[in-house]
Image (spheres, rainbow, N blue to C red):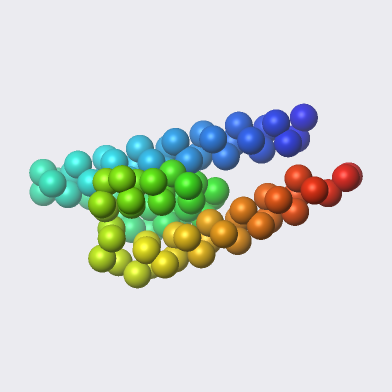
Length: 91
């Protein structure tokens, strides 16, 4: 049951992260008020690394910022390792 909830959570947070990156990209093009970088990184920290990385690559957004091009994959790899450890735990 907990593993199913974790899976649903991860799917949801990644969709949300991608949407936030897409909205920020759209606002950047229109020179409107932007979503803060802290918010975008927070979504990654909450498990939205795949969605954020998809937003970076597919939308070509934040590609000049090292904290996004290096930081997002680094956080994501740590989270993947943690989730795999959780899934492997028999308890």
